[in-house]
Image 1 (cartoon, one colour):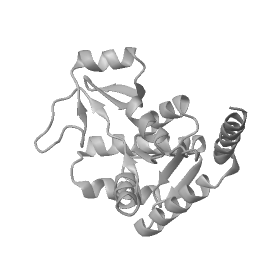
Image 2 (spheres, one colour):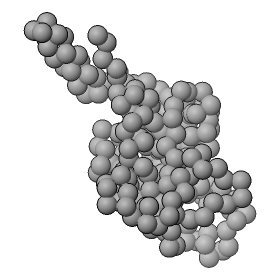
Image 3 (cartoon, helix red, strand yellow):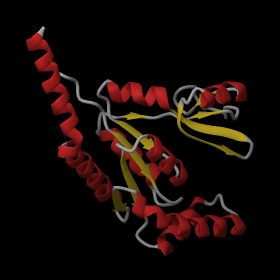
Length: 210
């Protein structure tokens, strides 16, 4: 009997403007991955689809899931809750499916507390000046909010040491290829496969003794 390999949880985060969202979209185009969908208590916006953009919950439903320990991480932002459903992620991983999670840095660190065996990748901008230019190009920031985001990015970059890998996003295709290589290398690491090997040996031993 062949033992199914457990999927890999790939957590990608970095400061606003580093390009993590664009990178994740490119990775999903070329790889058989399942992207984790967050839950929220805010109302759906025009065009948003239940189960595709978010799982939309009432506040009572969300708090019930908190009490049931069904979030890898969660936070309250401007009066609304946001969180990563644990049961759906674990279900996919146990089915051997690799899961990608694009999330902010604080959320990623909370995920690491609950699921340390994940692969944590930090996306860095080529420079702080380029990061500032990318945020400006969005055209959605006031001068005040721009400076707030920029100061926050300076602080967030200090968290890079909490991650397994860091990838500089100076060229999108190059960054995507580096992440794909990291994922391949991680799947071949002894640390990740030894539990599967030992579990398989135990299974064979049990079958022989039946």
